[in-house]
Length: 347
Image (tube, rainbow, N blue to C red; front, side, top):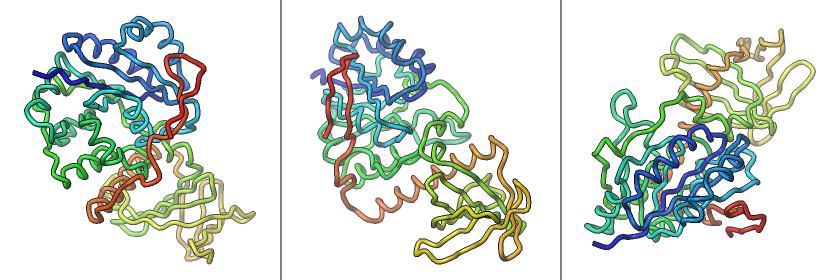
């Protein structure tokens, strides 16, 4: 049996508490496989990841089992770009994206190799999410041939936040004739449980959020005005029974005025005026009441649902329109290898 080189690629931005629990265990759990490497990409993490890595990971770096990379440019966590960058830094014939909170399980590398020795025209992924989101935390686990990663041009970097980045890549591979191998052994499907807030904590939407306002349209429907800090707004309609899950979206620009907020269509024409009555209460020019969302938990739920909604739109667009993604490149940026000060540029 050929022992193909397998690269496990993990990205971390402010998730050192997970990496500290998973990384060394994953290395140990795959120590029986003779041709494996682990890639850890520090995606400008603001926690103690760098100091921990410098203190604890040198023996694994010296042995060639691990390579640590750091980029200091990202100001927010861009899900697809970060994964593309990590996989581009890997040297294996088989690449496996592994979320920071995921455990591989004992012998996972050997399992991957066995599947690819049977058939090279495959990719490996977890089961569908299932009831009560059973496999929710391992959906980012995707193993594919390195040449397929480049052929399909990685994860679509239009997907900036959490959700559908991996589903889109798998869909594009399947549509081109690649066979999906589903991981059925539950030993390989474990992850650290955590709340949904962490999924979006450092993402684009969270970082760009300025304000959220909500208005009840009728018993079944509400409207949300989402203001970003770059003067862009998004208007969503949601089903009141679906926990802030968007159904429709409109976009435009907004202007802050003494009396309140002026919303403009994408063509610059006026769309809606929101007059401020109190700090948390605005009234539209058609006499509807909008209230500021002050609950952190509600804001987090909406931002997660928005991220999934935006990723889903791109996923369905790519399914309907067969075309190349990332035509201007993917995973580009500047990184530093193994604590060196010498720049590496990914063009």
